[in-house]
Image 1 (cartoon, rainbow, N blue to C red):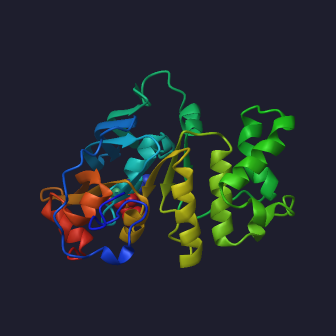
Image 2: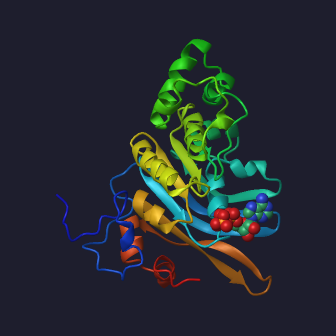
Length: 294
Ligand SMILES: Nc1ncnc2c1ncn2[C@@H]1O[C@H](COP(=O)(O)OP(=O)(O)OP(=O)(O)O)[C@@H](O)[C@H]1O
């Protein structure tokens, strides 16, 4: 049994503790101990044209964990997230330097198919973006274009909707338009659509920012459940959310270049979520998580 004096950060956190004075950690936990590494992100910088949005980022992502990327607006969280599955390829002028090793292989290596990368490393966006199709067709779409036979699609749709905790609400109206669902249901549908392709990793870019607290709570519960099967990396502005659901947290900030007057995102600290929110190593992290940072 865990020590009751130890704050329960990481998936079971009491959100009211956020902002409390840092407390001594019982011991320093090696952030990468004991879990298989899915991503080894090494010295990654991302440019948009001549503008360097984020520089020199290095941290690992462990299998079946939830890793949260937090930090002030514009520090490059979404940019870094999109570099993990080559989503930035779709942005004209975007360029990634360094190494994003996924299961030991650089996703930017010559010959790597970005479509296959995005199948294995799926993405859920800030705003639910269902296709203007039926609920069924939204989930079946990916398997269909990847050549999964029609006979297997019913099972995939049901399984994906169950994993996304949406099945009970939609099982009797699969042929109805996805656009008639609530915002929270649409976001769970987008999660079902993503996991229908059997990815290993699900990237989530502020998946709850357009949702009310009840829908947010459902997605958070869902994330924790999905992490049993998938590895999750989430960008969130919501520090309580990061503290509630994540195992590891990467805190980003910006450095100002006095000459060009531009801001570049940097990784300040990466560690167990509990440590980031209780005894961070860097003063900038502490100022941010305790709300002293404007
Ligand atoms: N497509 C793009 N073209 C040019 N610059 C971009 C593009 N996308 C982002 N940027 C710039 O890159 C920097 C990092 O942006 P990014 O959206 O990654 O930050 P963020 O930390 O996710 O911000 P927020 O929390 O506000 O969403 C910002 O200066 C932003 O203006």
